Amino acid sequence: MARPPLELVWTRYTSAGQSPFDALLVAAERDAEAAEGLALAYAALDHEARSALFASVVRDAEEAGRSPAGPLALLLAVEEDRELAERIARALLDASPPPGRARGTGWVWGSNEEGGIALASERGAAVTLFGVAWQGARLRALTAAPVAKGELEEGRLRLGVPESAEAIPLDAAIDRLASQLWRARRAGGPLPEDLRALAGFFAPYR
Image (cartoon, rainbow, N blue to C red):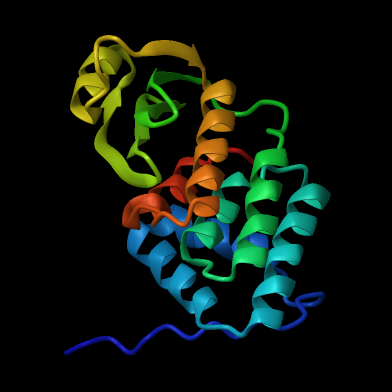
């Protein structure tokens, strides 16, 4: 039996105990399917409600001292209005990580026309992996199961990162990935369906 579609009803949350930012982050932490359902529910809202929700996510993150990058990537993946997508993308580019963010590394390869960026973030005893490869304005998500800390090279191979890739700090890789997402949106190219995994990737940054 098919489950009923998720409906997102956004109201003022002053006394609700959970902000829109927290709701997006919790959904991403739970599982990718929940994050995808919430993103699609966001997409079904009218323009005014989506704009208000986006502004609240940014404001909540600033007040909590957290990075809004994960939730913003989730919204950007489904936002079709060009003006609002631009605002979300610029906020994603401006998002600065709070002190004590998770440790990790990144890789970059190729050029602006054909290449990729991959991220590896330490979560306890495991390393979470995510990446994006592109040809022109078309992006493709790269995902792999987490690996143990001592198996980073195996994780890199599973993710499809080429031997020629340059290792760079995690923060620098995240910045480049945000720039590439915005470049693709500006060129009118589709974003990867699995971009919702990026929201879960940022979940530990609290």
